[in-house]
Image 1 (tube, rainbow, N blue to C red):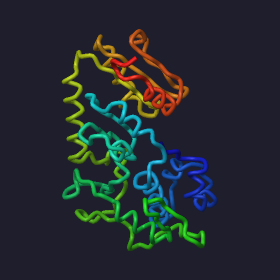
Image 2: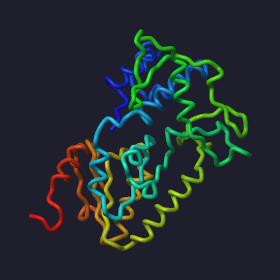
Image 3: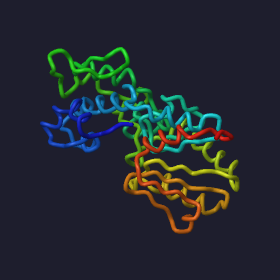
Length: 274
């Protein structure tokens, strides 16, 4: 649903792009900013528009309509929480790589070990300190004068309430990534789902998974399909639709966009209808 470059990037990060010459949000997330004030000015915008602002398309609701009433489970590397925000049952979701809506200690240990912290209020305060405004539905708005700051005051920098260290995003970047109690529970529910459906008729539907992290969704889906003769694998990917040779006879590979496919699938007659 979200694009990290183009007009959307220019709308919210034109000042950073002009100063540091990167061309998309992802690159800006790894830039070595000279101060924590600039780092959090950038990341507060990044987090807000990709986690708390309105979802820009209806795709997730359409996906929910397709699986409603079925025994489904969602495994995702997305960290924008769009599935849950669109009405998917949170007990049928596993966000493996973290959540933009959470902070963690930079080096969690002792009282901060295994803990994450909701960041909504902290991020909102950072944005207000830069001069941003908000619409009634939480869209981020440029102020009337069209100028915002590219840094935040030191008193808005986030520090862990349990160990006093600087906080960072709860994203899987290195070995310090916190898999908190919610993460562990979701992982357990996913394992239970797979065990319950072992050997049964099941579809592994892969939507837009690239080769950055194939070991989380893509390769396991291939293996699960190969091990279960009642399983079927569907891959939808613009330019990267493929599978292992041993499951080709039980696979459907679609080189196309997810939105077009989901829209077409939603117009198919229900089971039992002509």
